[in-house]
Length: 274
Image (cartoon, rainbow, N blue to C red; front, side):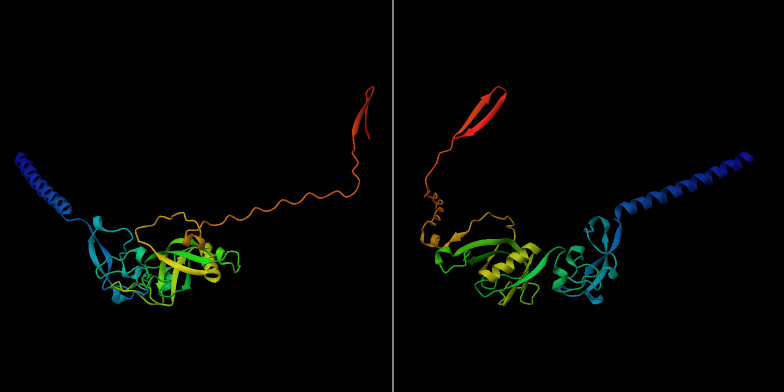
């Protein structure tokens, strides 16, 4: 009797173990077939540079953890009230690189990276390359002036003072036209370092500046040399004359030669002048 009872208990234990094993295998297979997901914040509509993110601008959706981009947010509270610094399209994941800091607000100030400065310069159709210098492009700054502050046109010089400078704004617009049309504006705002901000301000005050539009993929800074107006006509830049040596002063009075004679007496030495 006891033997049959043990056999029955063993059979029941075997069935339960088999059932549990099948459940575990099924759970493992489902976990392997379905990747882990998490909530991620995306743009509910197109977001423009400078605008402040509101509840209606963003939403959350599930996304596989393996496909989650770096810098993504998981809660709406993390992005609401922050400014947009790079344009985003609807259903695009909101990344930390595309919005301003939590306390930096919106608009142009939020687009100025730490340690940099925004400086505006007056432009016209020529200086702004027919209006194609728009937000997001990069330019070189060229200045023409007279370094000697003289009226001599021979000394008029053109040189590149800044290279690969990002354009923050064209007039009051913080982003380019969606169709790529030129923008006729009176000022261009550039993003520069504090030292370059001083150089740019001085160049605007002392000479005439010209913006040279760059290809966005060309980030190399070239070594350039200043050019004088004589180069336009194929004339070699004249070499400045060497300074004349100071004339030797003339002696007007009689010249008396002085000779030193060393006199040795035993272990003593004296010098006599004649």
